[in-house]
Image (tube, rainbow, N blue to C red):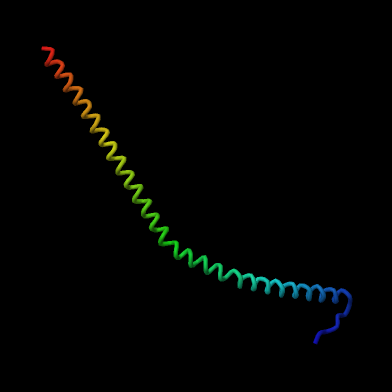
Length: 104
């Protein structure tokens, strides 16, 4: 049973309180419905994330390997260019020596 408000101010407090309780109930119901709609989507996202994680790890490993291979190729290229330069200098020295020998 509900007591009768003593005056107009108390009646207004009760009216505001009742209105607030109704609003809170509506908000709780709305939140509950929203979570009911979102929960499956969250679970789906978690499942996809779990499925994608191994693929991402594989891609990272591939990228790491390619970066290492690129570094090795750069080192080999530098060594080859150095070797070509050494051979070019040796040919120039040999040609100079041959020119000197033919000039004698």
